[in-house]
Amino acid sequence: MHLLVRLGLLEIAFSALAVPLLLYGPAQRLFPHLLKDRRQLLQAHLDYFLMGILLILAGTVLQPLPGWITLPLALGSLGNPSLFLVNALRPDLPQKPLYRGLIMLSGLLAAFAWAGMAVRAVI
Image (cartoon, rainbow, N blue to C red; front, side):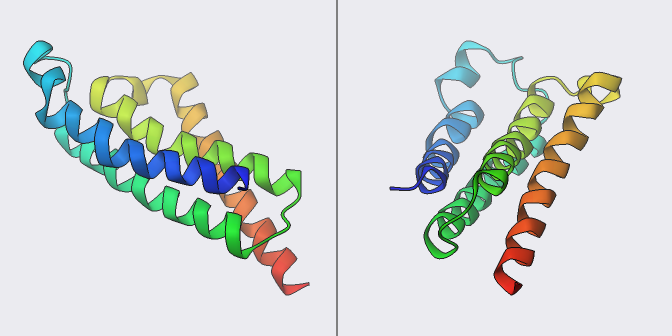
């Protein structure tokens, strides 16, 4: 099984189990002040799920993929929803320059990988 398919399945599983547990489960009862922004948590939940589906598709349909596409795609697809999760717990972080740089880097990695796949598919 390709690395992207494995990562995609892990992201979907995380979306289905861990994120709702943070919202409704034991973590909310044990640490009621942990979650600061429910909307960002729901955004992370959806983003993990959608990125997981896209990784599975890329890992099955668009084979073989070179490392210069696989690595940025994996990092960007894990980074983007993870940043929403961090925002749900620490909404003050997006104001910090280093964190803003991480947001930009994660988005650029994913965009670069998807653009690389598109160019590679056409050529």
